[in-house]
Amino acid sequence: MHIEFEDSDLEELITTGHNSKYKKYTRNAKFMTALAVAYNYLRTSQQASDLRAVSFLHYEQLAGTNGLSSIRVVNGMVERIIFREFDGGIKITLLSLDNSHYGKKK
Image 1 (tube, rainbow, N blue to C red):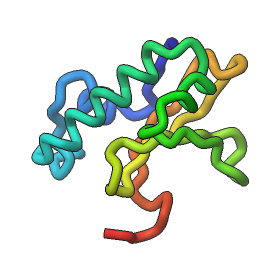
Image 2 (image 1 turned 180 degrees about the horizontal axis):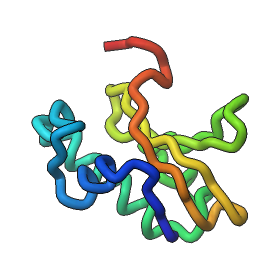
Image 3 (image 1 turned 180 degrees about the vertical axis):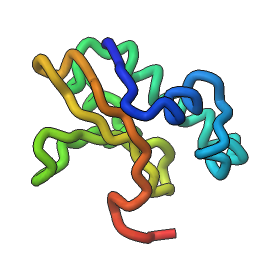
Image 4 (image 1 turned 60 degrees about the horizontal axis):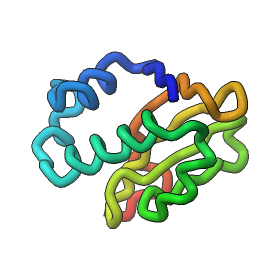
């Protein structure tokens, strides 16, 4: 699947594992490993609905958000990757971390 990043800092975090804006995430090795795994599932899937088959990602289309979908990065943490699907789920053009999806549970 073709992935475009809206946030260049997030692209740097995912591709290199380091970024000053997301410093709190780079210190968490478990999170960074899970982020790489989640990104690889996004990258290798043919369409976004294929992500439903990977249960630990908890793929869902977000209601009331005008076409946004999300996947979980790490079980037990609130951070999720939020993205927008285009062309029937073949192209993702927005990818962002969101730690408020389920409210403040930390």
